[in-house]
Image (cartoon, rainbow, N blue to C red; front, side, top):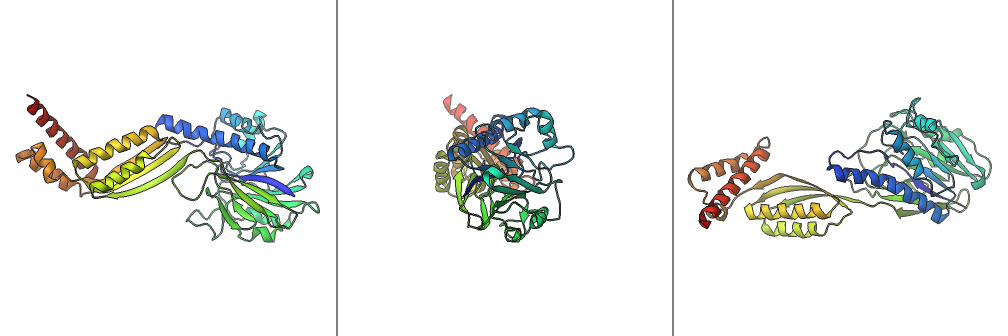
Length: 375
């Protein structure tokens, strides 16, 4: 039997510019943490090898310190690692991989093939047919070489590649770096370990995407896993277990509000967020002043208890009702300005500015009325 972990798309060095600085730093740090968890998992499960199917690094321009930290994170598992270059960290003549070699931080148990070929692991009775990318984009199927690659008789044959299985991914992605959907059968592979698609996905019994082990975008395609693969004998059907590895849960909510009860229900959902949640919140519809203010408080509270909340209020119109205007004393000139700003919100080019101006006007008018009453 052969027993290994399949993982991919670590994207070490990824930046999170849409987040506040503290949140971005912790999300980037989580990518190192998950590699350490994978190493510990490999040691705990006593696997024969760990296969990493590309995009170990998010960019060629990561710092030397980042390269050293990545390879240090592998330390908990002393068995063989086989990792290949993907489109983000292609094996160019001058690349992150050549820098890693110059830095001397690639341990002897870590194999990094830079050209298509067979990585033979006799002690594990495993032949890894590796197809690292040598440029960011190619329109040739780099796994075609597997068909002609020979391995020692009786070895388990496992392919390791990074690209897009033609016609089989459930979303529109680039047509570069294509992989034939029947490559496992053509190349007589017991298993084909793939990277590039960031969700965990089975193409067939022998062909899997592991997905990124730590979610890094707002897409519900089942990221956050490593795959535990066991094959009883050459030719046998692999037994694949999805092992949760991710820390953060990324969610995207689009909410349309028209009634106060809609906002109350949303506030309850926001209150349930925890420290591991990363939320993008898009609000649409229309609300009155008290509902707007209650929503803002709910979002602010959620941002304090979640890892990160990215709210977008641009699609939510502020529509003061008669009670709002009456309570604020917004009659005469102020009432005319409020009505004009409210109408301007219908113009997408002016909606954000008009909405903010309307909120400020109503707040100033309310504060002035409150001060006058206090006297």
